[in-house]
Length: 170
Image (cartoon, rainbow, N blue to C red; front, side, top):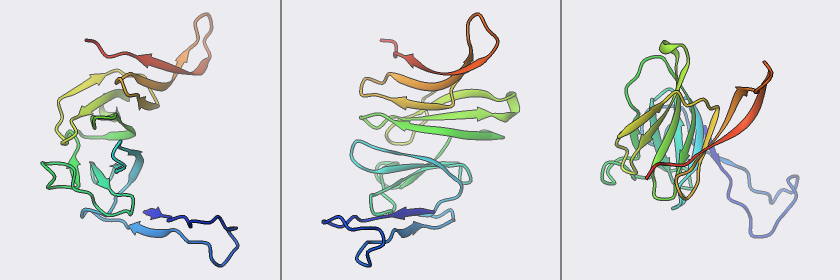
């Protein structure tokens, strides 16, 4: 589910009867505006919320009120299907300022190999990068990728959390 909270103009205590309650906006389902197995969400530069759904194998766009936002397929659809795969776990989602969408995927059929899939702002799949060792991903204004990962430390055999940084080629 997705809940939307519209804040009041003047702050009030949570216990105050005047405090707004969050409203459920996206119940389970497969139609636009409904969710099945949401994994994570990201906000576009235009203020739309992109939701990565494991159950529906798609990314769906919602407005800040929780309603479906038609951003894909020439503004005809609020969702697009992800690259067809079997036995995958979607781990994370990031969107950069021009609308390119990055999806971090673990392929269970290949022993848990991770990939970073790229989708255009219109929902088309142009490329993937395999063997990206990451648990989370973030993209900045210049399309630099930052990932949270767990690598063995040099000189030891223990695992430490770290952040990696990749700069796109020219």
